[in-house]
Length: 262
Ligand SMILES: Nc1nc2c(ncn2[C@@H]2O[C@H](COP(=O)(O)OP(=O)(O)OP(=O)(O)O)[C@@H](O)[C@H]2O)c(=O)[nH]1
Ligand SMILES: [Mg+2]
Image 1 (cartoon, helix red, strand yellow):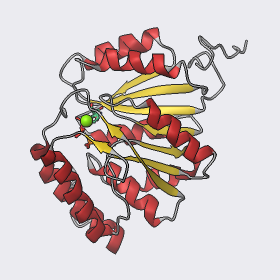
Image 2 (image 1 turned 90 degrees about the horizontal axis):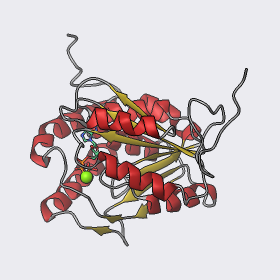
Image 3 (image 1 turned 45 degrees about the vertical axis):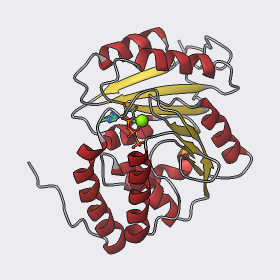
């Protein structure tokens, strides 16, 4: 017997029981977030209950050594609109890519557990529905944004942007953080991305610009609930390596630093 879609609240499609696809999928990569994951997801679910769209949340975990997975799974067990997957070693880009590929919504929103910025969701969905855009970046550097991170992290974003401009013709002001897009319009680009870790997000944005998708940036008010889980300086070697790879792949069509088979 076929089950009929059940809504626990007005706008919540219950996954597992509901064949109806949600309008919006929110993908949140997480890593060692036991301190805030439960409260952040609770806040998010509460705020989303006031919005006028159906949704699912995909928590994309990999490599946590704390209680993140258990807490996330317990949360998902109590909230059918939340799914958790957990695979492999820490790798933000791989988790985000897998989450996007598992999304079912017409629109996909990429968020971070320390942001969960529903105002961005609202503004981005309006840009896509009414403005005709396929891809929206929530930029912490575009005019009108409020970036409350420390100076050295703001400087790092500017340096990364400058490198991406020179290396691969990046045209915007931010590649990391909040993004929203029409899933069908972007799947080919997501699948084409080859670099992972932090730079997956940059590759996704750069490829979108180069493919002449209808993209835009909107300013965000960046208020993190805690400092980053991995210190900026530890991320630098991988970022540099992946910029070299990205340049080779995008400009010359081959990966100059391919991974050795294990
Ligand atoms: N799955 C997964 N998620 C990660 C990993 N590293 C960070 N995250 C998650 O990615 C989101 C952003 O991480 P933060 O530690 O806040 O990093 P950030 O420096 O503020 O991020 P950006 O400035 O946007 O690059 C959070 O939800 C983290 O839990 C990882 O290795 N794997
Ligand atoms: Mg952060």
